[in-house]
Length: 495
Ligand SMILES: NC(=O)C1=CN([C@@H]2O[C@H](COP(=O)(O)OP(=O)(O)OC[C@H]3O[C@@H](n4cnc5c(N)ncnc54)[C@H](OP(=O)(O)O)[C@@H]3O)[C@@H](O)[C@H]2O)C=CC1
Ligand SMILES: CCCCCC(=O)O
Image 1: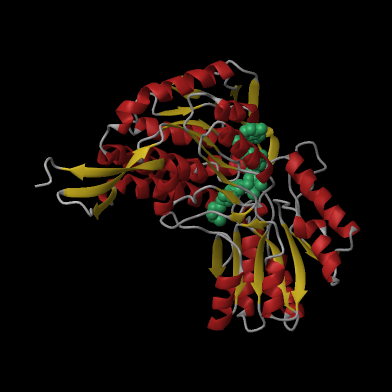
Image 2: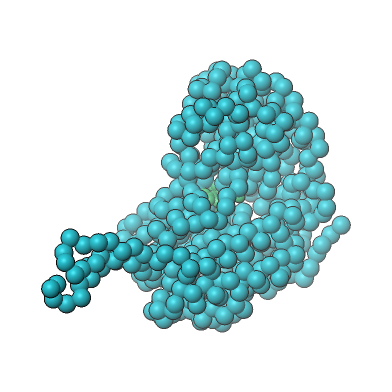
C-alpha cells in the first residue's frame, strides 16, 4: 500500500521568516520508492547562511537575557505541537528516512520528550554557591550561554538528534544556526516549524538546508561561538579541528562499531531477541546499533540457531506498511557501500552465517533494500581482528560474529575497536556485570538489553573515536552549551 503525499516545498528559516533558497535544487526521495519525491526546492546559499548567522548574533543578547522559565515555556509548547502532529510526522519520517512507521512515530515522541526535559530546566539548579575563606564573601558559580551555536545533524534520527542539540542550546540561552542532513530536510522543516509556532523570537533559531559544504562554512564563520555535530567520524574530526583552529568549542558524536557480548550463563532467548533488535531495527542505521556479536563458544551454535529462527520472521519492506520490521537504507550509495563491505569481508575469509530476504533493487523504482545479513568471521584471532566487517562501521543491516573461550576473552574482543560508543552484555552473573562495567571502554553500556536506546535525562556519548567533547543529553549538555563564571561576591566592607 502506498502512502504518497504531494512533495513538500523546501524552505529556510532565517530571522523568523520562511524563505526560498537561492542555491541549487535539492530533492529528497522515499528510499523505499525512490521515484517518489518527499521534499523539493532550492538549497540555501552561503549568502543565506551569512544572514542566518547575523540574525542569530543579533538575537543573542535578548535571548540570553530572557528568563530560563520563559525560554523553557516555548520548548514545552513545541513539545505539545509535536505530540499533536505525531501521526503525520511519523509517516513523513518513515517516508523520508526509511525507518518503520512505529519507530518513526516513536522518534517524534522522543523529540517531544527531549523538548519537555529541557523545557523544565528552569526548575533545576542554575549554578553553585561556595563558602569563602574571607569574611563577608560568598563564591558563586553561574552559567552563561556560548552565544551563537552551529548545529550539524545526521540523517538517521532526523528529529530526535536535532532536538537533543537544539533544545539544550536554546534552554541555556544560545541562539542557533542549524544545518540538517540533505537526505532528510522535511523533518527539519517540521521541527523548526513547531518551534516557530511555539513562539520562538525571530533570529533565535535559523534553519539552512544545504550540502555538507554549508556545514563547513558554518564552523568557519567568524561569528560562530560553538558547534555541535553528529555524524561520521571523518567529518566530525575535520570539524573539530576547524573549530579548534578558531578557538571555538566543538562537540562531536560520531561513528560506532558496537559489540554485544553473550556469555554462557545468559538468558539466550532474551539475548537473541535483543541482539536482533539492536542489529536490525532502523536497518542498522544507528550509531548505537549492534554490529559485532561476541558469543561464548560453549553456547554459540545454540544461540546462532535462535537468532536465525528470529530472523526468518523478520520482514523487510516498505516501512510505511504494517507488519514490516525493517525498511531500506537511506540511499543507493549507502546500500552499495554496505554491500561492498560485505563482499570485502567474505573475500577476507568471513562466512555467510545468515542472509534474509529483501525486495529487489533491480527494477527502476526499486527501493534501497538490503537483506539482514550475519557474517561469521574467521576463528583465527588475527584474521578475525583484521576483517573489514570487524573494523569498519558499515552502518547497515550486517552483524559480524566471533566466538570467545570465556568472559575475559569476550571483553577483550569487545574492546578490540577504535570506536567506543555503546555495548551490550548478556549475563546473569553480577560479577561478570561488574567486570564488564570496569573493562569495556564505551560511553554507554546496556546489561541484558540491546546496545541501542538512550534516555534524555542521562548522559549520551562515546569514548575513543566515537565522541569528542562533552557528552550530550541530561545534565551533561550544559557542559557544552554554557560556560561558567566564578563570582567572588563581597557585600562592601568585610566588617
Ligand atoms: N554518535 C552518534 O550519536 C551518532 C553518530 N552517527 C554517525 O553518523 C554517520 C551517519 O550519518 P550521516 O548523516 O551519513 O553522517 P555524515 O557525516 O555523512 O553527515 C552528517 C552531517 O554532516 C554534514 N556534512 C557532510 N560533509 C560535511 C563537511 N565537509 N563539513 C561539514 N558538514 C558536513 C552532512 O551534510 P549532508 O547530509 O548534506 O552531507 C550532515 O548534515 C555514521 O557514521 C553514524 O555512526 C549518526 C547518528 C548518531
Ligand atoms: C544514533 C543515535 C542513537 C540514539 C540513541 C539510540 O536510540 O540508540
